[in-house]
Image 1 (cartoon, rainbow over the protein chains, first blue to last red):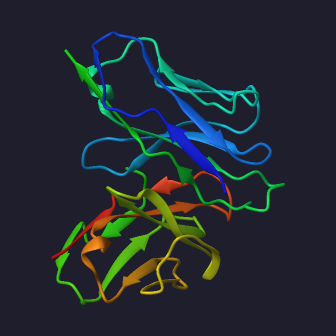
Image 2 (image 1 turned 60 degrees about the horizontal axis):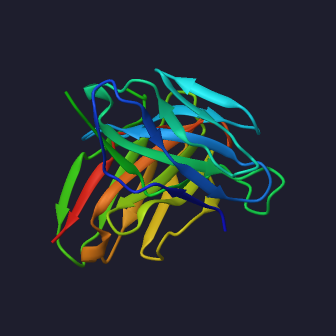
Image 3 (image 1 turned 90 degrees about the horizontal axis):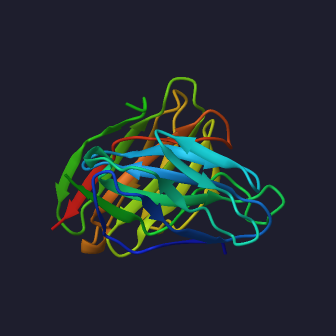
Length: 117
Length: 112
């Protein structure tokens, strides 16, 4: 079945440092890919998404590019802030041509990001 | 605020008991999803309803059931509770049976 693998955390950075959180997936065809963020005590918020190969999703300074050849969707931000401290989840939903097609999200384990001032 | 509401926010109950979690989707959304977030299993899809009908099922135990009512709110019923059922339960909604999902704040269930 479909799966998502994220780098283990926690990731601890100083303010204004560069952020990369790695995400790779296993799925048939061209799944849709997402990054969700969960702030302490809150639900998940969609951060960005990409629905086809080579698409770049971006939001609030975060970016991720859908790389079909490496089945990856790494999250990056050029300069992190303390307010970015949260748990980040990579997720996918299956491709319409797949036997697993549907709108359920398959999540990675999540990566805790801690940003120090 | 995503527009998805969940009640209660916290629930503490004993093993063997039954509880009901409630979710109201965003206005206009027809699909409701339930996810379980636990330390050992991570975030897992449980079940999806679309306009009152079950649409997809994930790793949902037989002790768990759900339904979506005509006003589109949904309830997740958990029975014969075990310690391992302690988790955060999230509801999400989307406009159609596919598309972007918006998550509620979750219900934290503690089974003692």
